[in-house]
Amino acid sequence: GSFKIYALPDDPTIPAPPRQFRELPDSGPQECIVRIYIVRALQLQPQDNNGLCDPYIKISLGKKVIEDRDNYVPNTLNPIFGRMYELSCFLPQEKDLKISVYDYDTLTRDEKVGETIIDLENRFLSRYGSHCGIPQQYCISGVNTWRDQLKPTQLLQNIARFKGYAPPVLSENGRKINYGGRDYTLEEAEANQILHQHLGPGEERLALHILRTQGLVPEHVETRTLYSTFQPNISQGKLQMWVDVFPKSLGPPGPPFNITPRKAKKYILRVIVWNTKDVLLDEKSITGEEMSDIYVKGWMPGNEENKQKTDVHYRSLDGEGNFNWRFVFPFDYLPAEQLCVVSKKEHFWSLDKTEFRIPPKLIIQIWDNDKFSLDDYLGFVELDLHKTIIPAKVPEKCNTDMIPEYKADSSQKAPRTASLFEQKSMKGWWPCYVEKDGSRILAGKVEMTLEVVNEKEAEERPAGKGRDEPNMNPKLDLPNRPDTSFLWFTNPCKTMKFIVWRRFKWLFIGLIILLILLLFLAVLLYSLP
Image: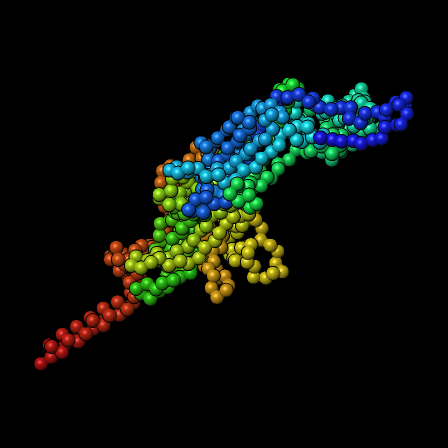
């Protein structure tokens, strides 16, 4: 309550001083609508053996209980709930709002993680308007529609009456208000604001601007600490939320906010591997020539089970490989957060999938194929799809200076990058490198086309993996590889023709001539008497 002590005059004929508390709230019970917005929890105490928990929300107000057990969030200590609960109550009889976080268990009893208690009567009677925060703008449509029961001009009149000020005076055109002996204009209030189509009338916007200077509680998300009765002085986590209280006597409130978590959209990353150049030659052929059996592997982090690789370009003698091969990587993406959403079971016995949010990246690796031993890793490049390296148009300009984390000369300008989501498509040469003795060595160059399409665009312009159907957008033909590009032991005739004969033909011709001469000498010696 509020108290004011002031002296009374000794002479009873002198009138008493004026009463200080003239505008008092109704002392009778008030039926109210309560909206509880639960955004997310932070740093919850683990409850399961895997060091995580499966939290859900339980709300109690008087005799009313809401147990949202069906909407638990599995395997996380930082759950995003995005839930709004609405119920009614009578104040001050049902003033304590208890919000609890429980851990969902299938076979055993659910355990309470922690709880927080809010005194709704204190908020309802507060002179700072803490029953419903004041927003920054007055909107009559859109996602931030005004939700209080009274308009800003009505709230301003109430504030003036509570403070003993004269009622605010509104000009005829609604662009100026005199309040507390000062003139406020709409032009000054919105001097640095961006106006949009969802804004309401000018007089309401100006009244809201004045309200925001009166020390009222602004619209905000509060972070409350969760406590447990077993450990009363130790934090069990944080809960980000807010509460709105609306007395039914003032009429229905505005529409509630929609804080449902964003759903990831389906996107597809298409990667066409055209050629490689200057790849490290890791082996020697049966004829002693340096060579590599090149193939390219690619995947997106978080979707390692969807690794894809090209076919093999055999017997590359100069580090050049030809592929015309398409990778197709579907992924779930949140454009507002610029993150990929990956849901997978951590173990085969896990009941629920665990959700991860990671930046969208592409990893490309160059490998040397071996039939009788493990394949040899040659080099890689990692591309951030939001800061993708601008590729070189020709292979001669492709080098390790293009990599943002590494430059040969610190005085050089930072490499240029761009968002693949904005450009939609890129084509050119990217460098692949390998770490050796603390430095990065160019391991090869890859010519690729990168393209990001959404689900609708993928249906309109289909494309298959590799060179499989539907082989379109664009159509990929078989690569034009040299005649020497084949697996030598699978075709002995071609091996003799293109490998052995091509390299040792003069030796064979010399041996044949020598053999003929030896036979001629043998016949000559045999025919002598």
